[in-house]
Structures are given as structure tokens and as C-alpha cells.
Length: 540
Image (cartoon, rainbow, N blue to C red; front, top):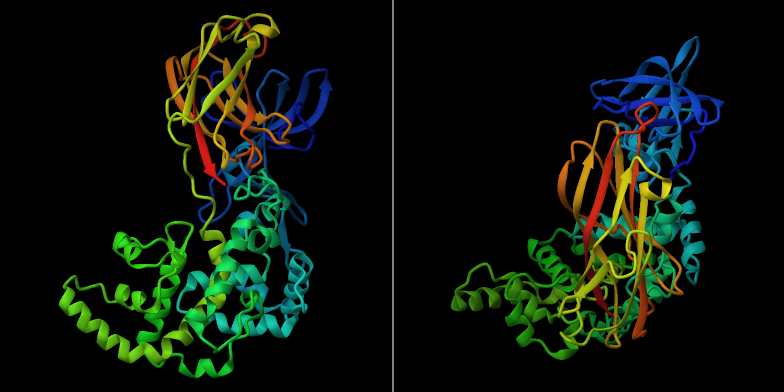
């Protein structure tokens, strides 16, 4: 992410000088001649409780062979003084980050600018408390994104926020707060904030963009839950309220219900039990609960929506004695039976949104022996004909690519310093499953003389499906000898749900970078002996 081929005047970079272990921070000043730039090298000064500051610049020259990685520095102008340069993210390169720390900021009265890396909870409270138009702004943005009917207004937003204070679970209150501010981290929201991620919904086979509307309502996984609640609402609430899907946004709890808030610990405990037993698989007594529940009380296989009686038993399970548990259950039933439906409805109203996130497509592999390899192809200077082999596991969860001559080295021609191999795998698998790559493990040998650097990179994509996912590992001194390391893919691309055959394309690159003259004859070597890929299967 955010990589540059040539240095840009005014930008900040991190690099290493030959023979030095510490990273150097430089700012490009100007382009002198071809492949040569004038720059200023800065020293980092740690300031307790503040961002590190850069000081004592010295002029240096930068040649094109030096590896430069873009970083972010925040400069603050001062009247009659030189600007103050503050190092963000401790100089971590943007290529290693998922979001640009200077991509978004707050501008306070007086022109002061607050960056994402400087955000605090105190600042958040100050911004919210001093903005009387916030309910109207939040309502208009929410209406624009999800198109509620009738449209929400400031009154509905304030009513919802007031009711969040009395919820027995801060997790559910926090979710509704984020939802009302359209700050749920769906893929589109994160992408618009500058993160480099796949924007397709992984729960429904990357068919649709993962917007807020899709995540909570349109996605088939979410629709199944809404249908279930529509059929079973009366079981929890009775005739107290008529079923409506978007209560979680409107906050339409009857005012009379709040007269009971704080009347007893039992109401709060039972409500929390309802919440967590509904949204999460039970950690204790799971087999017992599943055996006693009807099939209509199951969602997603292991997410239970048990009856109020079962919930009370779960709550009283602190004592493992059956006799005492029955007695305690009977006593609890008398004390909370009248308030149970009321509190259940109260929690469920603001729980509905969370359920959409709690039941994605469960990760599950196809039956052993049902995955077959239709064809395997490979090509490239790193895998000449007859020099590579692809082996698959019996359970279809992994495969290995072995190489006989995948070596990049220096000094040499440009083609010697960079070698690649592209592998195409066409698999046949049962309908109802999709897969992607989860991790790749590199095994090989490396040798570097002073000043020589290198990297290994792997990317994958599916034929006729947009989107390529890449992972990069930089290697170099002190690495000398055999190596083995695993890299995970930060995002996933899936083939369409329902496809039974698709070609997976994998492109791997080994690169050796020589130092600048006169040390450009130093020896560097990277050999990849094999790659082990772990598959991630999803049932759709």
C-alpha cells in the first residue's frame, strides 16, 4: 500500500546506509541528476508522553538502488521558529500499515489539527459534547446509507441514545451506538477510510459489496436471522409489542418499561443471560442444551435461542447439584417470571444488529476425498519446465509446491536478480463450498553479503474474478542459511458461491537488491525450495 518507485521531493522515507543497522529517516529535497537525489537525514529524539521529534538535519545523497520506504511525519508550523517535525507510528513504513495515519484528522477551533494517531477518549467526549447538531447529522447520514422508512430524525436518535444507558450489557450498547453513527467497520466503510482491503461480503461468496445495509439486512445470512425472529418474536415478548425489524435503530421502547429499571438484580442478570445465550454459543453445558432444545430453537447449528425456562436454568447453574439447582430455579422463576418477557424484549430490540455479525458462514472443509485436482500448470524463470511439483493433502486443506531451480542472485543480469513462478491450480470440489488461501510458508536458503537486501512475495487471484491479494516478506542480513517462515494473507478473495470448479493463480517472486556502486558486486542469494499453502474453506 502507498509505495513509490521514485522518491518524491518533500516526502519522508526510511532507509538504511551501508554498514549501519539503525534505520535512517530522510526527507527528499530535490532531484539532482538521473537516479540521484539530494536529501536531509534527520535524527529521532524521544520525548516522554509525546510523539518523537526529528532534529539535526544533515545533507546526504540518495541513489536509486537504495531501498526507500515511505513514512509519515507531521509538521507543525511555529511563528518565528522552524517547524516541528513529529514522527508518526514510530517511523513504520506505510507499506506495513493498513491505513494512512494522516489520511483523516479533526480540526479544532483555532485551526489546531488532531491526527488519528493522537485521538483519545477525552477528545471524543469533547467533540460530541460541544456539537448540538450531532443528532441531526447522525440521522441524515444514517438515512442516506440505509434509506429507512420513515426517515429517522434527531428525536429518534436522542431517544435511542438515552435508552442505551439502561442496557444490561455495554457490548450491545456500544454496537447500537456505532450503528447509529454509521461507524460499524464494514468493508466499504473501512475502504473509504483508506484501508487496503477487499470490499466484497465474505459471508455470501463475495457477490455484493459489504455496505452497512448489506451487512445488517440484505445479506442472506442476515435475512435468515430476521426471518427467524419474525417467526419466534411472540415466544419471547408475547403481545407487548408488534414485530418490527428496525427497532434497533428507532429505539421505540415504551416509556412505561423504564419504571422497572433498577428494581432488582434478577432482571438485569436474566436479561444479560438472554443476550449472551442468544448471540454466542454456550461455553458450558452445550451438549445438554442442544439435546433439550427443539430444532426451531437452533440458528447456524451452534447458536441457540433457548426458551426462557432454559435461560433461567443456565443462570442458576453456578451450583452443580441438581437438587439445589432445581430449588434455586423454582425460587428464581417466581421472582422474575412477570418481568422476563419485558426484559427479553428490551434486550432483543438492541441485540438484533449484533446477531447479524455473530453468525457468518461457518468455516468447514469438504468431506475428505471430495476435492480433486483437475489440472496444474506452472511457468516462469523460477520454475522452468520439469523443475516444479505440486502435492495436495488428502483432506483438501493444504498443498505444497516444490521447486528445483527457484533462485535469485546478484551480481548478475536483471533477470537473475528477480525470479518468478506462476502456478495455476484447477480444483473440483462439492457444491456449497468456496475456498481461498489463508497462509503461505516459505522454505529455502538465503545468503547475503554486506549491503545486499532481498524479498520474497506471493500473490493470488481467481480467474475471471477481480481482486489480487499479496503478501511480502523482506529478508536480508543477519539471515544467512536455511529459513522457514509463514506469512498470512490479510484479506481474502473467494470464488462465487455455487461454483464447482475454479482456477487459482499464484505468482511468487524472489528478488535480490544490490547496494549502490562501488559495492554493487556484493553477492546475494535467495533460493525457494518449497511453498506450503493452507486453504481456508467456507460453507455457503
